[in-house]
Amino acid sequence: KQKLKDNALLKKSFNLSKKNWDLEKFPWSKNLKKALTDVFKIKELRPLQLQTMNASMSNEDVILIMPTGGGKSLCYQLPAVIGKGVTIVVSPLVALMEDQLNGLHKLKVNAKMLSAKAPKEDVKAIMTGLVDNKSDLKLVYVTPEYMAKSNRFMSKLQKAFEMKRLDRFAIDEVHCCSQWGHDFRPDYKFLGILKSMFPDVPLLGLTATAPAKIIVDVQKMLDIQGCLVLRASFNRPNLFYEVRRKPSDKEACLEMIVSLLKNRFEGKSGIIYTTTIKESEQLTTDLRARGLRIGCYHAMLEPEYRTKVYSKWFSGEYQAVVATIAFGLGIDKPDVRFVIHHCLSKSMENLYQESGRAGRDGEKSYCILLYRLMDVFKLSTMVFQDKVGLQNLYKILNYCLDQSSCRRSLIATHFEETWAKSDCKEMCDHCKKAKKKKEMDIGPSCRHLYQIMQKAVQSEQRLTPLKLLDAWYNKGAASLRVASVPTPKFPREIGEAVVGYLLVNGYLQEDFHFSAYSTITYIKRGPKSGMALANDHKIMVEVDDH
Ligand code: ADP
Ligand code: MG
Ligand code: ZN
Image 1 (cartoon, rainbow, N blue to C red):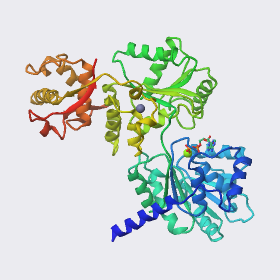
Image 2 (image 1 turned 180 degrees about the horizontal axis):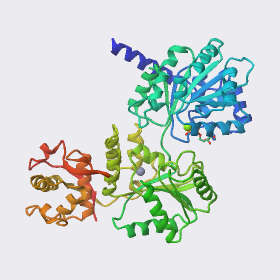
Image 3 (image 1 turned 45 degrees about the horizontal axis):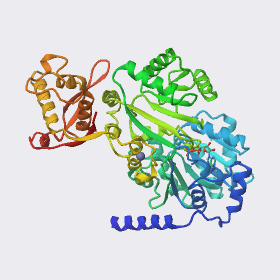
């Protein structure tokens, strides 16, 4: 029975997606165009904006998946402006709502916000505006927490609904409904009652998080299974993606960054992302000492100071900002020509989002990730307690280890899209110039590493990744080395790649321990060790061939 129901829903969703939502013959089409130019001063709609608006205004429930910066807000703001009633916008963060309110007030649109901090007059204006047919109140922004807590607001909504003044619910960052999302918020659960409480009011969910599993979960939570799902492409054709090996020597790494900023990116604007606050401060100091104009940005700085850094960067006084991922929300600089990751991100999703701050104006821009295996372990101790933290981290590790695939096609896989190699147009390191690489069977290496690990277990010692590699390369504590294990014939970077591959593929695994001050990761045999122990078990991978 469930299967029949699922099939019916699939069919419904499929039929909806086959409709021509981009026609301009809807009763509101003229008004829509007029408000676009008169109110929003926008010349042209972007892909899927018109489809989304037409479907939502036809009272369909819609989920729109579109990358950050794609223009999701307009899809409910514009219908709100030409509608007779009120649009309720649910958003997780007050800062995000304030940004939008400022924008709308400049356009003379009557929009207000309800949150724990909202002034009493505003609350009153909203409560009366909702149920007043003569009010010009168009949008009410509200956090899910507020909705869940305020009976007064919910009963006003009920009344507005009976008066047919509720045009639609727009639910921003709708992936927050799903436990599988990277950003689950329990308060979003409350939104599950909207469909039964306000049956004919269309829901419009918006997100930049794409996996089908999450979208299905969201539909279930909101009780809109089989609704129209519109998916924009995540391809950013003007971004050049590159992964570089990060020198283990700190000085050499600085040289690399300095050279990029002084040569390729001379006179260009960019962002350099680091993992920790301490690193961002250190890197800023080091780059300044080499004569570069650099700002520093992280969450522990005073808001006024951060604003100053942002405006100096915006005006070009700073060539680049060295920042933690706190630098992200509300960046609206069109000509960011480069984003350098000083350390890999926590996930492909993060990498995509952070890199995506480059090239908003459509001009060619560079996204360079500096990769070193040891950086993975800094991150793994930070993310291993999240449900899918390690899984996400190993996916990006795999992206870094890859020696031949088109970076775009790897990113596309993550967003469950398929892009042909021709979609890249030589805009990634691998498509531009094939690397020298060779296939290697790392089965023997794996067994050597197991021997080292076995000895450590016998002598009741634990192996950090560094100690493991040292022992393998005949360095470090003599007590950890194993005489019968030969020193690898390949350089240490390849040795690191081997350990990376073995981790990603489950032949090794991390083992986390809490010490008084930090979390430490040790390496032990992985779930696939049984297979690897057989002497003829091959593990073929591609490595860099010097
Ligand atoms: P998202 O929520 O998808 O991340 P926003 O709704 O915040 O993106 O929009 C990003 C920027 O794009 C905003 O400055 C917005 O004004 C602008 N924008 C949206 N649609 C268009 C359009 N059709 N033409 C030009 N600019 C647009
Ligand atoms: Mg948005
Ligand atoms: Zn490519």
